Length: 348
Image 1 (tube, rainbow, N blue to C red):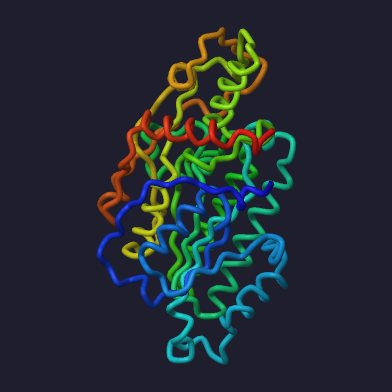
Image 2: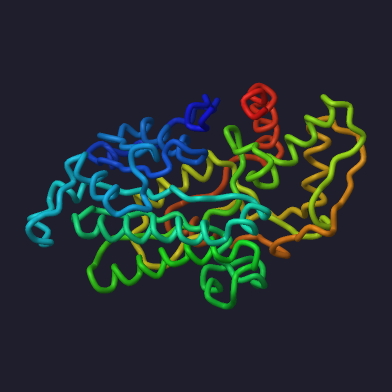
């Protein structure tokens, strides 16, 4: 079953009182995916005029012809001039570019060329065509993997160019990082309103629980629950448990993206995170406790740890558009675990 066909249980959140979205036509690439489901739901709550979710079966965004067709199918035509008066209708269009080819460490190691090419081509061509058509705003979603492998803690946006990313996911991180370069260049030369957001690792109901491509939280939840069901005495965890990570509940991330879309119009990148660091060892112990797994943990130190430490400075997001994470980490984990228990048959 395709992930976009899965029902995701969400806690209703009252939208802020704002008419900003009422006249906006919003293209949400990746809107059928994990984060995209939540963004689309919030856009509905905010009463956006139109929400356009391109499906990969209809529009392969790595192909320029598909991008042309996406805009043209929804009446977002190339105008005779790029002067503002000629693009009045298109100024109410916002592109939220969430689509990405993503995966865990092993998947990135096996398919680095695919991760680089797909992410670079999708973003670069889509942003260019949005500018050509006079779209009002482009919101590019980057990745924490764009930061240097050894970044001073907490990660501040000004450190983004201080070194090379962690090797196992560098092709993916650099491809997404080029969207920042493009956004700033197009703003400088064309005055195009493109912004760049850097969300930390996301988790929550509806995440990817496929062990071949999932990230650490869904992988650990699945391993712990399956071990109990199969009466297995142990689970294997990659690395030695020493790296640290920061996690953001997916619904909080969606809220941050919409706040930035409405209120942020600057060239500098912005971190989206919770600002709280946890070691992989502590994360594993928390998940096994919450799932009820009491068996042995085996650390496979032949597998890579990934980036040594990650935690973000989130002060710019709070100052620029009032964003701060709302969901308690253990409460978010519990919701994710409950969702997987109810939906695990879909991943077998």
